[in-house]
Image 1 (cartoon, rainbow, N blue to C red):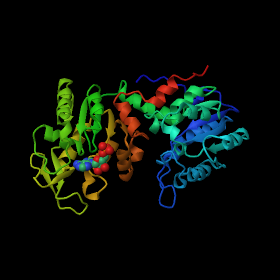
Image 2: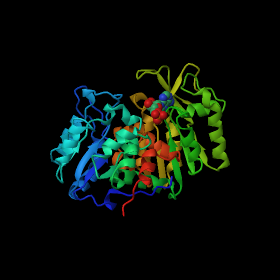
Image 3: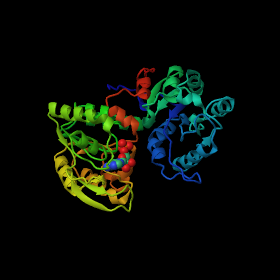
Image 4: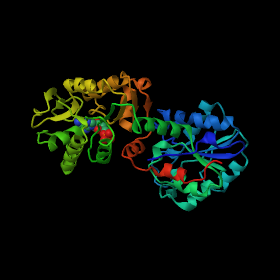
Length: 402
Ligand code: AMP
């Protein structure tokens, strides 16, 4: 995707009402407390910049899946409170994201004020990319800024329809800028060797990504549950391991594509197998040819960790999505943790993307050593696949800064 965007710092926003689409979809506990505010912190550079420039800042986001209905437990009120603390100023939570009451609040705003609109997904129109709904939101603002990379792969009213109606310029925020510039560095003209590490459960979710990577990378490392589908496709027995019979031909196509393109493909040479899918299961390490009939492979083994870590030694760029095993259970988290350390200690540009990989990296405490951890799961994968992201395409077709 050739991306040419206007960014917030290309636009004159002084005294203007600036609508910033953010991703404040943060995890909450039973009592409605925010358990991780990384997503809120990610948008602070854009918000602070807009405030410093003297803009009136109107923030919008979704939270959870209220399915078009008001749900008090999915109100953005806790986000407004946390944001207020982080910005050290009052952040008013609006009663809704459109409508007369919201208009009144917006009309009374002064430069330097911040309001947070209520959960966009309280309206079913949001996820339908409803044009009228986008128009109503657009009427609140003079400038539109999208800083929600994690939802850029969805065509919703707040990132697509709104851009057709905003009576001023559109652009992207600094989080989006960061995401795209790291992605570009890794995938367009990267320092080589460029190595992709792909794990996670299903090949079926990542066929397009794997085929697309075969056009770009020098080495492709496949771990996690998906490696067992590849193993099965190559005719090996995988016992009770998770494997997708419906995509064995696709797995073979990917193996063949890698061979045609002269890409070195690395698969696990040993596994930690368990007698059941349970943290207290009996476990042992076996080679890839020896997975017992009634056992399941739930992590890569120690020889694989060594093999994979040698493969990335000379990497200049590493892109990683998906855990190496069932890292949620301690007994099967070692492979992923070891790979986190190996990647973190490489002298390479390392870009990690996808929800689970991000969690694994944080768990291992190595996030500071990664060059960049993407905030996008689906959006990151779709970029890897070479797809156009609707939220970004909408910005490219929107009015440019003069
Ligand atoms: P994905 O969303 O495709 O990146 O997959 C992430 C999930 O894959 C995690 O919840 C892991 O527990 C799971 N996973 C990784 N390795 C295995 C495995 N060998 N067997 C079953 N599930 C796995």
